[in-house]
Image 1 (cartoon, rainbow, N blue to C red):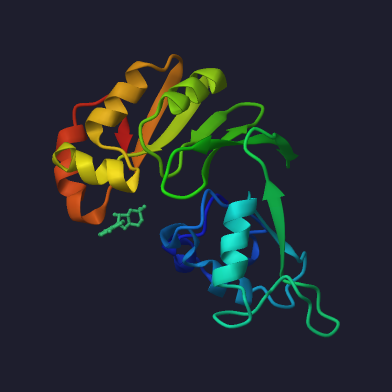
Image 2 (image 1 turned 120 degrees about the vertical axis):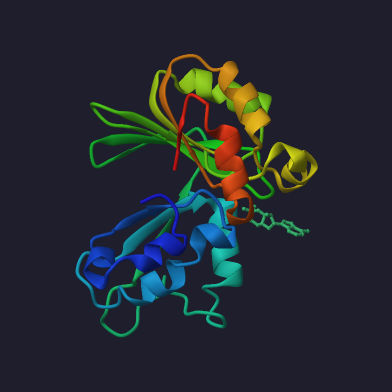
Length: 215
Ligand SMILES: Nc1ncnc2c1ncn2[C@@H]1O[C@@H]2COP(=O)(O)O[C@H]2[C@H]1O
């Protein structure tokens, strides 16, 4: 699974118990909100520890601010004879790892705090998730380097009239998205995501004619 936002909390307990690996893009709350309760629900489950992967900066933020034995237990420590619930696994941008038949590469994207997108290659599919990010020359370079891409999932948080807010909060607008995609070759499908709820209908209207699917 990539990220642990509020969607994770909607799964049943048995569905949660099947998730053994979570790859985090960054430590913002909407991407980790369900992680504390998800992990507390794993105690004494088989196949522990759950592995949570992320940049060193992401894992440090989690340890310092949440799993600090004050806000929530430090689940990296075992209690009694039980196995520790979680193992935090540090990733570096650009370092590929093999995982269950997939080749996973985190790549740095521009956002307010250290953030990575993920390229996930299996035998039949190359999926790229850009995470929260804004327009940048590096993103264009990385997408062209990673291409061909079967599915690109990319954000579009704010309408163009809020370009200044998008720049300050390091997100995309439809114009930024369009400029980015015009410079990238060889993407089969684009899925647009992370429409801010307050602007969702406005964004859906603006984006309705584009060469993408809006999630
Ligand atoms: N100073 C601010 N005032 C109001 N909203 C903000 C401010 N900074 C960030 N945000 C919003 O808070 C959100 C935090 O998560 P996001 O990065 O998805 O998007 C961010 C913005 O929508």
